[in-house]
Amino acid sequence: MAEDLFTYTVKCRTCRTAFKVQLFENHDKNLFLVDRKDWYCEKCKDAYFKKQTAALTKTHQAIGFPEMKGSRKQVSWAEKIRAELINKVEYLRKSLTFDTSEDETLSEKAFELFFREWHEKTDAKWWIDQRRTTVRDMSRRIEEISNTIKKG
Ligand SMILES: [Zn+2]
Image (cartoon, rainbow, N blue to C red; front, side, top):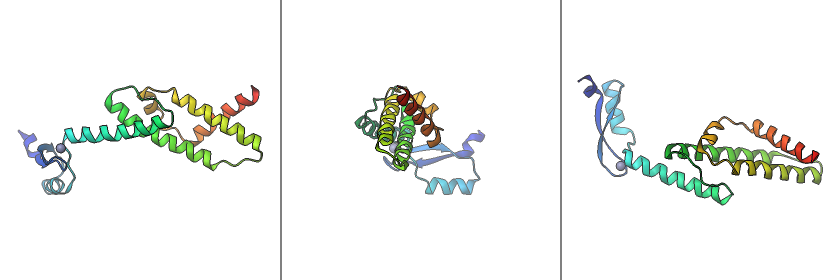
């Protein structure tokens, strides 16, 4: 079978188990990859993602985010996106300056409500859908919230 031409045996870097991979470059390049690349078997990859996701879940729980719902793969991806988005909001919050302490209090309140909205989002898919959210998008939402507070 032609497929055998592309099948190589590699060793998992973590558990040293040999497993087969398919590579589609030219033979020399494939041999180079087999030799040099860090290969991880499915089991070790799984364990790694689980550990990484568990660590993020714990960090996020500490700042008020509940555990996410979804498939393991979705949650693993969504946790990473959530971490990036939280970093963006924190960046935005730190970049703001205020003329008056009233403005500052209002802004703090708006950020708090903004985070509260996020805390309610427990569906991994929702976070994956937000992966392109920019600091500007967040800034706009926080301004909307501020305006609502002002009116209230
Ligand atoms: Zn392994």
